Image 1 (cartoon, rainbow, N blue to C red):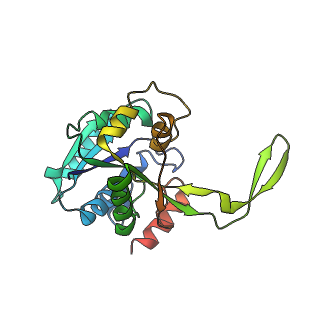
Image 2 (image 1 turned 180 degrees about the vertical axis):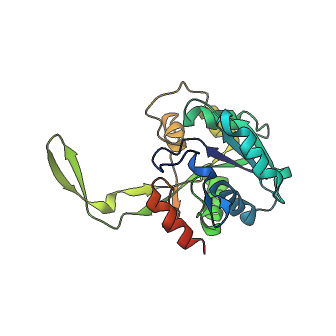
Image 3 (image 1 turned 180 degrees about the horizontal axis):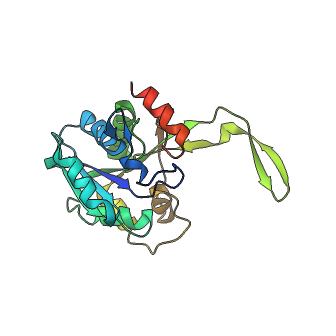
Length: 221
């Protein structure tokens, strides 16, 4: 069965205090986006990569890919106004309804091969899979100017890639956009699908703040 990865390379460098989107910031002399794609290539050397990118950075992304050994496997497409629309644009390029796709944040270059294997394997078995990790700290729910303690064992931190049967997730993305769609799993869930959780890897952080760059660079050594 064919496997695809949609790498969502949206967002800006505002929180990173960077003039370029965070996925193009270099770590160890290489753009974060390339580190991320290399993780998928290491998992499956034949996987097809679709990078959904802001229109202003399509040329930059193409120039990065031209210098890689896997450039022929990568298709750069124009993203959309929101993550939902960027993912939908990527899904629209996949014609093989029997395939499986992992939808991943470009700014998560530390996803492990084992996490990828678990996600795609579960998706092939049950139609979808979402990687999660347990919370390690106490949490409180804020209600107005008060708060109450919550049982952290009842919650999980959600990661990517979120993997799906192409046929199922394309159908889910035919729904009208809602701002309640915080990730791809919420889109599938709105259609009535049960979401299957698998173990992620704790270091699979999303690079959002300057401190995350330091952590990622250390872990990539």
